[in-house]
Length: 93
Image (cartoon, rainbow, N blue to C red; front, side, top):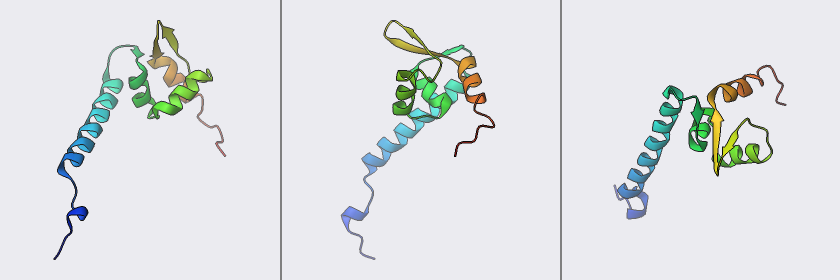
């Protein structure tokens, strides 16, 4: 069996991908178990399972409940849950 070097995964790249995935998983778990009522931007992305760009768009268009504290965005866990629940039964076609 003759494998070219290009066909073999680069261990360094694999470690970077694993590390990134673990970081996302840690933030996801932390966002769901954190006793704090407010989430920062990254925690809100994880809590909503939403990309950063989509959440930024929703913030800019004022479609998602949030507060601005100085230059930072804060999201109420309860308000986000209610916001998501408000879409139940909505036809998305």
